[in-house]
Length: 232
Length: 228
Image 1 (cartoon, rainbow over the protein chains, first blue to last red):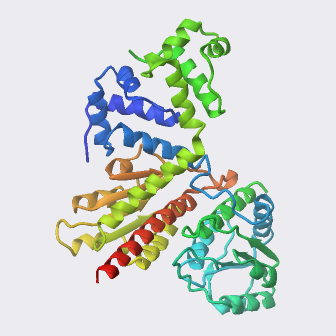
Image 2: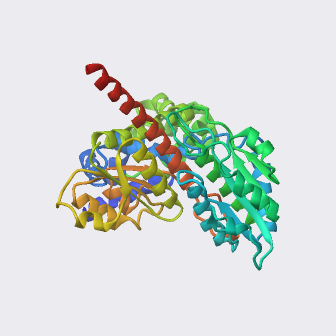
Image 3: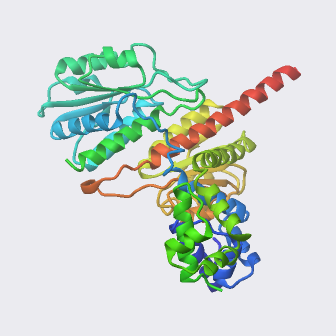
């Protein structure tokens, strides 16, 4: 680990102050503020792991990107995101004390999303394990609540999702039959219409074929729903 | 000379204008800030700019041209990470993450493996079973930039390049990492929860990285096939 002299720490404090205010700062400005030569500033930046001022600025600009929605896709759902996230939040609220589950059928997508959702819903005292087990449709002590199915159909170029046609439909039908409220989150319009879901949310399509943002969009929708849930 | 209150006010004023997509004149700035015109005019050069025009132009360029430029920055960052990964193809790529970002570990190891890379989750035991130093990359997803510091230090000591995604630049992990990407997020509690897009943003960033890697690998395969 690098160690810093008192002067270098002071320079770091000035740099941190600019970062926290999201300010564009020039090398001249920094050297004036800190009463040191420009080379001293560069040395500190290099100690921080940057090659120089140019690279440091580039990283500073990355700071701003999430605000500008550049990294995150602008369109999350096909229809109104606000409405979709509110409906999902309401579903969570309604079944807070029920026997819920999130379908974790494939390793590449659904199981990852299911684990994420399960962990975060537990923070809100809503228990919903990630599962692909048909035993979830057997009667337990709690009433049946929601069952979430994430179906991803449109992989990026060269993607292999492992979700064949009909994937997950057996579990969905069983859960529906048992009395679960079925939530389908998919980028397949036909599936959203025909899966027999009580709540079907159609995820927006990828704008660039090589960049698959299905998981990003589902996470954004889910996070927004959690935010609404906390205010119900 | 430290930055004065006057300089700060003028700088803030120009920045707000730039964020709104406008470039104020010296007269406008003087009128709106209540600072004498001659003083306003001097601020630009005292902040290191080549005059008022350069000052407002650079600020406008930074903020107002925003989306395109920032999109370029995102692509630059993705390219930097892709270069690091492609440059060490054939060597181990370890992935670690905590909290919300745990999803990125499974996701990225799977996706990198699909591209033929030797991706695996990080564990301390990995280095115990191998030579003191070797090439490789450690990718960490750590909002706080604190928790995974030991992993980063261990990887560094063994000659691995560290690529970190954190929620701030000013973290120990950021300082150890060769490449640090910041994805800002809002930490909150369930009682007043704010959406946390750290994991969503990390996956979006790496989808771009993977797209670049995939393109480059396909190009390499085509060249190899042609040479045969």
